[in-house]
Length: 492
Image (cartoon, rainbow, N blue to C red; front, side):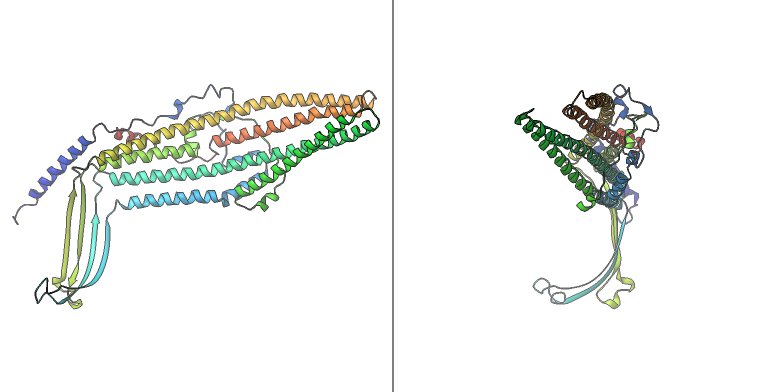
């Protein structure tokens, strides 16, 4: 038996491994994902966006908010990106995800450790007679231990790739958190501009009603009007003051919100002056929707989740096959420290071990079904994210387009009303109208100014929404299409 050729041992092992591989392949029969990754261009939006100018340079720049021409907004953005707790949280999650990927990678490589031990044991004479029983036996041991499970089927590598995909997804999520913060600041800043406009209109209305109140008081004293008209004007005056106070409260709340977004206390908000925003005409990129995949961080994150799930399938499949574990311990052992380095103190233990999954109660098939379902979920999540991106882009474009039309109509109406008020003023100077007529003619102008303020604020919001919908100007890294396609084919 001692002279048996080593090949005679390898043949049965090889045959057993081959049989197990075949059995593993058979046990995975009919287990595969139900979906596959498809091109984003299948979601058509060309007709909905057809009346919008197209430009090859219509993608927003990295600091997209600078196009609104307000240095105060630029400063707020820089402060927020440097000091917001939400960004710190997202970055910490990214670092943790990469640490987990590093942990998964470590499982691919062999391990080597060293140990030293001094031990003593005394066996009672009731268990073993003398000279063994009743004697304290000392031992000193120095060892080197080696362990390695070769990645025969690529499962460990796939687990590492899946962890890298999850880390890349988290990195894209961190960028999405930055974009969300930028969008919140820009939208809040635009709302602050509208609140200032609303306060201006309310303040002018307060002055107009004060003039009406003074005029009505004179008319009541002169017996021209009664107390009912004065009461109505007083009520309108109080309402105008309430509107101005509401605008002041809104300005304070929005300042506090902007300070919070910037990672600062409320006192930072007190230093904010009136916004000076400008909004230009809109245009969309010529490569929609396909380029949204590399421009939107949330779409990129969803794509990385698909990549991670595809590698998860490969990792789950590898568990069906036999695994090989190599281990060895070499060292020195002796009863006395002086004997530890003698030639006969050598200690060697180790060898290969093969593990074969035979009966597992369906655990491996359930695990593979779960991995396939994770892939289907990731693909569905990716499709939903792309659809949301296209919808948000279309909504922003259509909203801006329609608001431009409404602003044009309201501006024309306001100009006409201003000309009418000017004519009334001229008639008053000619003695053909009175002060009441002049003050009454100013009311529609204030109403139209309020309407225009609201429309312009909504138009600015649409411009911001479009910049956000197009990804905020910072392209993100994507997995290669060939990598996902190859994984998808293998999973079939």
